[in-house]
Image (spheres, helix red, strand yellow):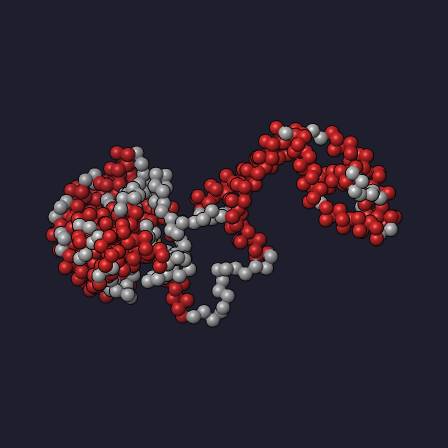
Length: 542
């Protein structure tokens, strides 16, 4: 209706000025259209432009909210997901060449593995640390998604199909599935009333203990019960698949208890004792061929403890074993390697002197190690340089994501500060990494391209209520947000000008519309001159 009114207004204006000669069919409707247009007041045009501004403003607000929450434009996502297939477009996610090379297949597999969520090797104690933070600040440091992943891990580590044979284990199997913390704690006490149950002690140490010393006491009781179960199941493991599964579960329980006891010793200042326990666990992990043992990543706990002792030679020995091209990388591996190389030159490093004489071989090695670490996880430097505030690390991390950066910096910032000049060298060189990889989502330099899934997963793992998730690379505003912002501003300005200067804006509007519809009027004149008047009369009636 609006387009017909605008067109009719243009035609009327051109006829009044003698530019268009109306045909016989146009005289019938011209008087009614003129009467309708003359009844329109400037308030109508103000309302029209104001409504357009309001609608485009609402679209802008929704688009901005959707972009902040999900990192993409809603209109763009709907267009790509639904409209493009209908129009015969090719899905970008499907490979265009069926004969995909082995290198591309390996890259895809690596991308999928890097988007996997891992258990944080240095995760805190829920009762003695996370809950204490909640009591002091009133904030929840863990998200529901993170705690749900922990519940799944506990069921994988601490349960097996033969739990129904032992009443205490049957109770604990239900306890690990409980969502209510008090129900889990009550179930653990109920299991302990039947017998000494290692997993019941674990649950109480993790969730009920309010201090590290209390947690350590409970873990020692769990160790005593767990070693007895391990010895019994070890003797029966070859008697059938049921006993083998039970032995695998008892092994997981024993390794978990010893690892947490080592962490208790580290937190209570007995670092050398913690290092000895972690070394024994690393040897035990290499001897046993259970896949779940590799999920604990005990070598990262060992690296942090050795750095606390400033035993850099042993740190280098651990890195030589685990910083291998065939093994998965982590921020702890890459940034610890960079710290050791920076330590050799950072105390005498000066950016002014380096710019004059150039970098020495040792300085070049240190800079390359920093670039390698930054390429693997570009979020870490802002936390190490205290450009961004730290929060408590989550119980799960995403490698190369913001969650891993927080977990690393939370424990390793003190080690960087202890090495004189290390943070200064990092500050001077870390941003140079981005000049080497201008398009990190398409092509990497030393690693595979940066995965695009990190932001979504980190928003699930981190408490976004009081923490702003770090995003790499920084996303530009989508076209539709800029378009709706411009449309909203333009229509709002038209509404204001029409309200203040109705007559002048009417003149401008008529001039604009006459220019806009000039080609169409020219075509209509040519069509009218060619077609007979009777046929033109029938077409206009239709």
